[in-house]
Image (cartoon, helix red, strand yellow):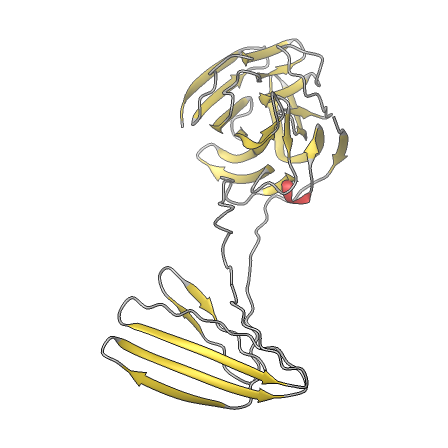
Length: 314
């Protein structure tokens, strides 16, 4: 197992905008859009153009032909216009003549949203990455995050939270332990919260996987949520499939909420619960079907060691 430990303080929220630029030279670049398709036309280095239009009973076709003489050059041709009424097709063709004559035809593609092959799966509205698959592979890692308010349970309280890639959080110190046990345990720090303690990992480049956090307002006041969308190692490597979160509430100290969107083994090889010294609340340990998909668990603790557990469907 690769191990490591870092500490970083992240901003409360972040947004990412994607913009696309279209470059124009001596001719005009036009973009035609419909409800379902977008095309971008890019023309470069043109000096003369003639337009011929022919009309038929079914539609109109317009052809634009441009010829440029130069010592060297490259020609780009883009075709795509779609309408919902009569069919109209526009063709742009450019030919460059030089000492070595070259003609190139390319289809330009412009993407303004997420790649449809990598559909958005993170549920947080403004996720800030703690571990992101776009930045590398993380197996048995933990890192520190400063919560916006103290995290409290069983009387323990701290805003210094260490997030493990193996599905648990700890106050004030971290751990890389991947071998889950029953509670209470000394394998991880005494003040720990386990939404899904198992041998998990983040594989580099896997679409929309990692661990993220967000701070936002709910009916319970300021809410701090950490969302996992990761893979697992046992019994074999799976790059995705373990998707769950843990939430804390400033106005409800002692209350912890786990949400399970999808897991591959539904708790059969995981520890779920929390502990503070000898006080603990264990929901399940390696129990089959203990957490079905679209399921939540709430554990409300008191300083004296009491715990009230509520469960249900999302």
